[in-house]
Amino acid sequence: MISDQALAAWLAYLSQERRLSPRTLEAYGFAGRRYLAFLEQHRAESLDLKALGTVTAGEIRAWLANLRQGDHPLSPRSLSQALSAIRTFHGFLDRRLDTPNPALALVRGPKIRPGAPRPVSEDQALGLIAEPALDPDREGWEAARDQAVLTLLYGCGLRISEALSLKRSDAPLPDSLRITGKGAKTRLVPVLPAVREAIEAYLAAVPHGFAPQEALFRAKRGGPLSPRHVQAMVQTLRGRLGLPASATPHALRHSFATHLLGAGADLRSIQELLGHASLSTTQRYTEVDAAALLGAYSKAHPHA
Image 1 (cartoon, helix red, strand yellow):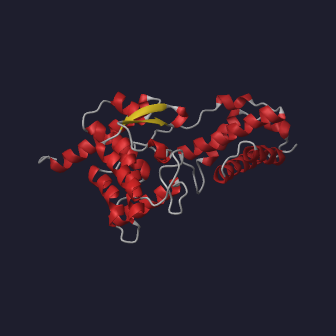
Image 2 (cartoon, helix red, strand yellow):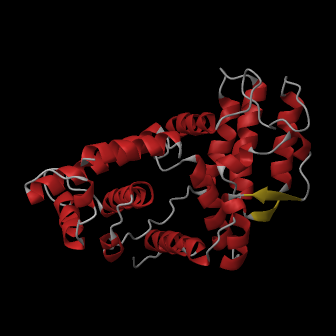
């Protein structure tokens, strides 16, 4: 089997068995083709399956170095993603085509410093929540629904998927919500009166009837509300309010954490409320809060 056939078999496996998204398949295929093209040029010969098992750690590092150069050099994050794709490719060669390559274990990807979250300010968050009711072209129940979703994201620190996973039977909301997040990790999130009131206002206005186990948030035609709707809705709202592109639905979750931190909440409590598996993930919010404090200091201090 030649290398192109091995690549095609891998992509077919990712599509048919792993059922990866078309965008991910495209990215993996692009990385694989660049990898094979580099190796063939580097060795000045065509590659067969046996040759793929003899690729050295030095050749893989040379390929990564090549990706850092040229007219369109890859960022450290993109390099890490490309290397991850090639690890997956060689894992497939090992498991399915009996062609192991231990050299991959000797190659480390570039260090990636996680970017600090970019929350919105308290005024911006409240502006986003209030804005749907000011749109004369939207039906009242849709505005109430959008406000309820945004209030959940900001008031409870939920991810979009978590907010949209709520069922009709979850309302009226109790004093605390049991949320199942990433990795099937369950957490309890206190429910503020403002959140409960927003949900009740939406339920009083929604024209659709639905069973207890159906989705709480409904689309215009009655089906479950999609994450794409929430993303598009916030994009429209931030345009009307003149907010930056970083004002996303997920930024409201970041704001929940950052504003709690600024009000004196400890990191361990915020970790529990957000459902982070590692405290180091939550500690990124200390950078945000410190930056906000320094910004306020530089603007307000007479000697700044």
